[in-house]
Image (tube, rainbow, N blue to C red; front, top):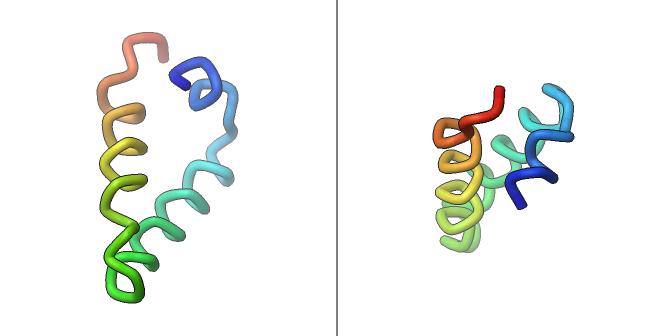
Length: 47
């Protein structure tokens, strides 16, 4: 999953964050993907 995230471009990452945040008030399911995306973004050692 880390390799997949590193291969995404900036626009794709922004879209993933926006969709995850948008899902929080609607379904309360956006928290899990958001946490995963934040971990991959800030926990990424290979930048």
